Length: 360
Ligand code: GAL
Image (cartoon, rainbow, N blue to C red; front, top):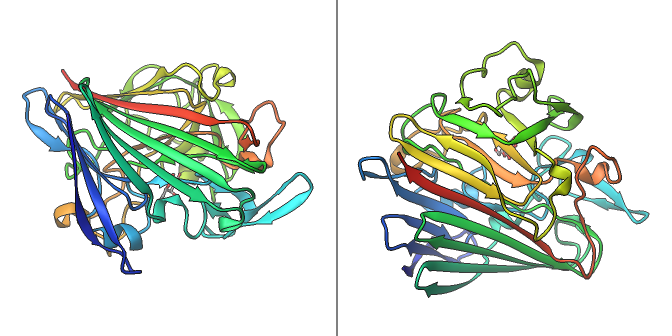
């Protein structure tokens, strides 16, 4: 196991970002920068041992700072949307940045995806570990409470990349942390992911309006949102379905089977499998989070920010599986259909998601 670092380029405030490379004893390498705790590359073998980068990203940290899309980033304090960019908690109103129409998306103007995290590295006989910490002061981006956040990236010899998210607060606050990696198991510059297959252990999904603010929680059964039996991502993509049309594809929160039993520190279960029949690469997703946002990169089309090597951004050439709580749940606290998103002083937010790669 090995982990090494190098300076990776300048941000607009003159600070230098660092790029960390985690290498295991097999043939997997992961690069992560302290800017946004962003996963920059994931190199894994196909069924013939050929190694390819399956993670979409940019060539420079300046692009990560300027571009939209949250490629590879750690997202917080509250990933996904908060309607009207404000919420009430304990009788007080909190105003956030409206950075997605009238709504707040992915933490606001400058969320955790756009700050430099403190980094520490370690290795053990079978793990390369990058520990990132960030102190988010009371009032930052409008959120109440000082939040201490720790995210631990671990690459092991089973070709599993695990991400453990821990946080503690001194006032009640909504918290929803995730990672926003765009994957394409055929390689980041391989085009559409429609032929890659997906299995998701989800019983329901959150339908949204045209701005993707939740309108209802619906069972997946009998809809294009049913991935409980493996099917190609593209199979029902163009189905005559209003919830798909409103989002321009899949961009929905899927609620895992028995999601109400999921809790901080709870059992980490296999919830998703993506498979690319061409390369044979497979990615399993294990988590103790209750939900995952499955997103088919419907907004990935910004001509100003080409991807690594100049490859253009194109919609549906990647998928994201962002484990988390339900969008806008801060406005649905106490409703049986919705997840809790409030962290109280004395509690520990502690969730883990594992992306495990193999080939067959
Ligand atoms: C996703 C979100 C999409 C889009 C994307 C960033 O998490 O669901 O609607 O905002 O982030 O471009």
